[in-house]
Amino acid sequence: MDGEISASELSDLLDSDVDVEIVDIRQPVAFERGHIPGSRNLPFSRLIDRIDELDADADRIVTVCPHGESSVQAARLITSYEGVTDTPVASLAGGLEGWDGPIKRGERDR
Image (cartoon, rainbow, N blue to C red; front, side):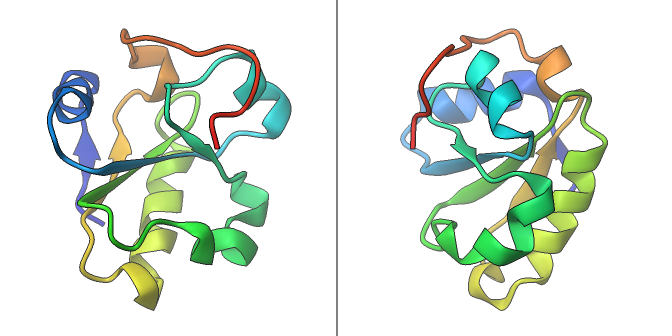
C-alpha cells in the first residue's frame, strides 16, 4: 500500500489525465445514496472474490469508505493481489466524510 491520499490530491488526479480507479468498498445501498463519480462499488465483504475486476492498467487505485479506516485495510488487500503489484494503491484519507468534490447519487457508475 502506498499510504493515504488527501481529498484535494484525489480531486487533482481526477482533473488530470491520470487513469484513477476509485474503489468504493461500502455496501451497494450506501453507494447508491452517493459516491464519487466514476467509482466502482466493490463491497469490502466481497472484495477478495471480485478483486480481479480491478483495472490492472490504471495509473493508480484509490480505496474509499465512509471515514477512511476500512479503506486502509482494503488498500492493503489490493496491494497484496499479484494482478496489481505495479499499480500504486492508496486509501482516501478521511473517507467520503472528508470528500468535498462532486457526489453522484442514484445509479451505479460501473
